[in-house]
Image 1: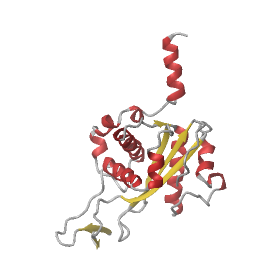
Image 2: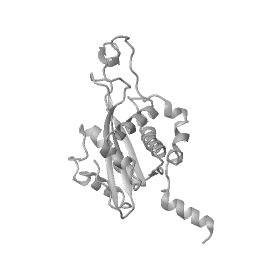
Image 3: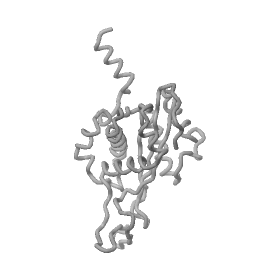
Image 4: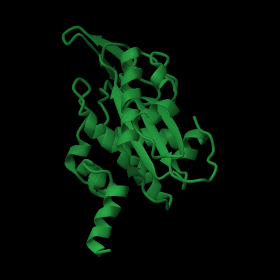
Length: 229
């Protein structure tokens, strides 16, 4: 077989066609881009940029632990995206989607969009999108009709994370949980889809606005993998 044909076939099998260019970058190259460092626009977030940022932040940690980077999979991404959207739109937080029998569990959701993987797993998270410390104050601004979040002593207002900062913060939170960490750092999972959707009415409550995030993992292997939540 001609070597060029072999390379093209390999890319078609391993890298799905029409993979967005940002998923083909290294994590270092992605985070070197100025747009990844811009603050989250909580009213009109760039959800595609945020989803890629979570993917790249995940691979950044994988590299730090000496593991191979995850590959983007459109089916896993679609499963993650629909679940993140469902949790925000239906106002719940959990692995099970009781609003859709076809997408009740993570396994059903992933199976609906791809049959590539023998084993799958899912991480979910819910984290504030405003970069606040553990203790802060909130006040209602009568002029803007929005809540503000500030330091009670210095009166400093707290601002949204950057896209990169929010993604990295979420991944670090997953690392602090043994169950989530097991999937994130598993050498057996090879593909991933990551998505986040943000609360639709930011600054409308005393607590900071938040995002609900999903990671779906896939492995094409015969080895038994640990069950994670």
